[in-house]
Length: 158
Image (cartoon, rainbow, N blue to C red):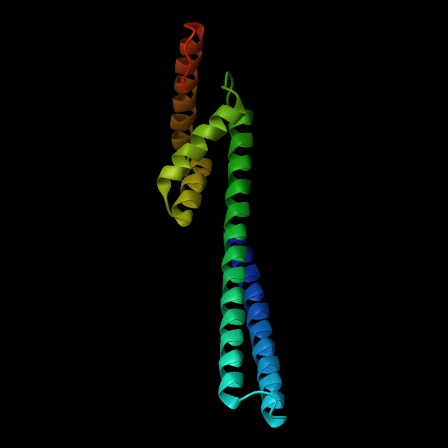
């Protein structure tokens, strides 16, 4: 919960910085447009169109940057939870399949979960509830056993 609060705080701070950048950018564009209009460098209608288009591009670029940063925060949080969960599994269980195999199964399960919030909730549930973690580890062991049996027969699972 504390990490969610921290990521929200970072997100708000990032959003405030981006809003300030947009305001400064539009102010500079407005000043440039005003100077061009005062010196009759371009036609007034053309100046307004250029300033409006430039402002719209600035706002959309900043919004895309903000969305990208939000996505990166979620990715880092999810990756941190996955690594912590795999470390917990490694410490609590014996006779495990390779961790890269278990991570692959976990990522495949998360890909079917869909929404980012649901993915993180699933990871937190696994970490908090021992019964859910037991089921996941048993499933991984069974899948690995099936894979090993197929390779002993000379078959592959791809």
